[in-house]
Image (cartoon, rainbow, N blue to C red):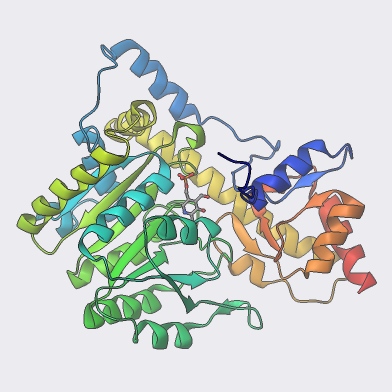
Length: 399
Ligand SMILES: Cc1ncc(COP(=O)(O)O)c(C=O)c1O
């Protein structure tokens, strides 16, 4: 079967992690991988997750199937998290949520659902974006188009170009947007810009699909929902894919959600029926454990308060490491302005390091950065920050 088939290309970021693992250099630093790490360089299990697991161990009576869209209480809690208590979407029962295997599963189910009813649509992705966006929507059968996003010269957003392009997107096409913590750039629109983007969606009739993979890791749970709130205010149909890999640390439990928002409760009921039909033929019903953990935490005020503290600590550490990197480079006499790193949001940062510098850092210093210069700021720790700053300063002196 496979003799005449060429091998599929390896995932470039996971390949980088393999190379890092095999590197014998004791000073090696992994700034490539997309997981949160604490100040000891490990990806921890949150204490609130351990507490929820202890509760579940006591109360779980059965491992029978969950409903197709997951536990209904999970769906209600996710809507509260995504839209905020008292949102009109919740009060008027305008959203259908299905528990999905990770954010990736949510994106794919959303894409499959849209494809059923918009077979001619294209999907527009930001330039650049998380590589899997193209893969997921291509696999669901969509032609892919790009809208301008990141400006390498100003290290900011190409907002006028972005808006002009979104003004030309045909009605019915899908526009995939990072709701916060844009991966890979770390550059997000501000509140005013989100409102303008949402107004264009309402005016032009394209379908917004928000990828909400990092809620709580940019500024905070409430502040990070600025994009969602802007689209909610327009009353249009839109989709939100949530991931609980990063903000609950549930990477290997594959826990996420897809939420379909409709203008009315009647339309939502129709959407829900097709959402379930789509899930049924993909994986039938979701894996329970991660969703039950999230549901348990969000349903119990003490546990939720604890989760909020732990999430705020992760977010705070990322902000502190951004500051330490910028200050550390300035203290070493690097005259290039890196202050934009402090303005970026979330785990990722377009560092502005050229590909030759990235290659030199890897070969000579065992510091692993993704091609294009994306760094995971959470890979920096108080133990490696000086080594990283020394190495970058040395690399830039050689330029
Ligand atoms: C932008 C973006 N969307 C979605 C995901 C998917 O997350 P999950 O691991 O929950 O599938 C990621 C993970 O890295 C991501 O960066």
